[in-house]
Amino acid sequence: MSELMRIYSNVSAMQNMNSLANISDKMGTHQMRLATGKKINSAADDPAGYQLARSLETRKRGLDVALQNVSQAKNVLNVAEGGYQNVMDILQTVKEKATQAADYSLSSTQRSSINDQVSALINEIDDIVSETTFNGDSLIDGGYAGAFHTGEGSTDQLSISLGDADSTALSINAISLSTANGASGAIATVSTAIDTLSSRIQDVGEYKVRLSSKEQSLSVASTNTEAIRSSVEDADFAKEQMEVMKLQILQQTAISSFAQSNSAPQVVLSLFR
Image (cartoon, rainbow, N blue to C red; front, side, top):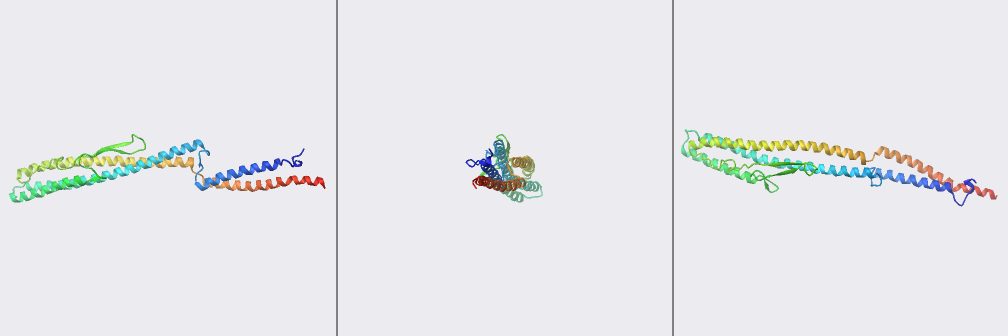
């Protein structure tokens, strides 16, 4: 018997209704992707893809924080280098004064005056050392040593140690320019202090070079990680819009077919005329 002659169960209408429901569900999925910009909006959309996307997102966030850490570390070293450079400028002046005081043409009064100037400069060196701080920590007093976290892993660290730049550490705290001989000896002492400080500034420069290299690597890794996550999770708007348009057409034809299926059993009434 033809299904057309059955009116108790309109199988054709039921099939069309199921098809319409499936089309509507699919359209809802694609419209959600267009609304959020993501093709994976829940684990049910793609369990494996969801897990991979979350793993990549975690790595991306870790890399971004590490990048911030590297930038902060460079700021710390910039402050330290600024302090060292200020001390270096004073040492150069002290050496000039020592060279001046070593000349026998000066009187004792003049040397005494120069010695007072140098004593004030040495005190200024100690002031610079105590005032060169970052977040309350002194940087160039010999006590700043630790590790900057420069990656997403637990062992991605750069250990640093900043040398002491005060007058005692540089062995210039006891120099005297009151006599020509004392001034001559001070020249050698200050020269050695300049060499020592130069070495410490060099260390800072090497740390900064390494940090710049890490910064570049982290930036590239972050970009590549985000690119991979995007390919896994982000929606292709052109494709999604194309699917929505296709489903809209199918939805309209399904509604039309469903309406025809509902009205088809009325042909049975013609048998009673």
